[in-house]
Length: 134
Image 1: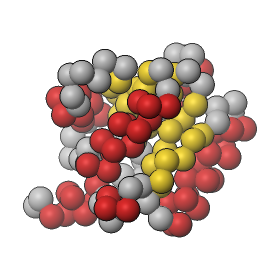
Image 2 (image 1 turned 90 degrees about the vertical axis):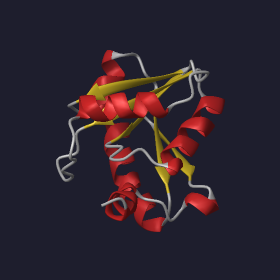
Image 3 (image 1 turned 120 degrees about the vertical axis):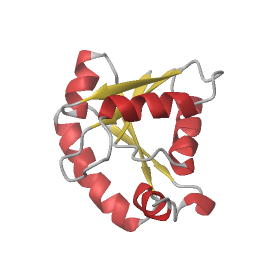
């Protein structure tokens, strides 16, 4: 089965790497989908972020690909024959938000699998990393 792990990945954090690593154990192929989120305003385009993510992945992770996308994740899944969406959750706030997205995607024919954050990575967020790096 093929899975997609969508996100803005601005920046790509240790938590994201951990989710991808664990998803690799569950699925034959994982597509990291660098997507546009209208509520976020990244400093670079999705193509630039996709290139940055690709550069950070271990070369031996041949079952992981990276793609840039500007549209609904469920549409990408249907067009590319991907059966499931993977999402990482750090806390109950994430779970509440992600559950709403999962319900919408399920209604569009694509289920979601949640992978809880490893305890040592639960406090890591792209926003915090971005703030600390400026």
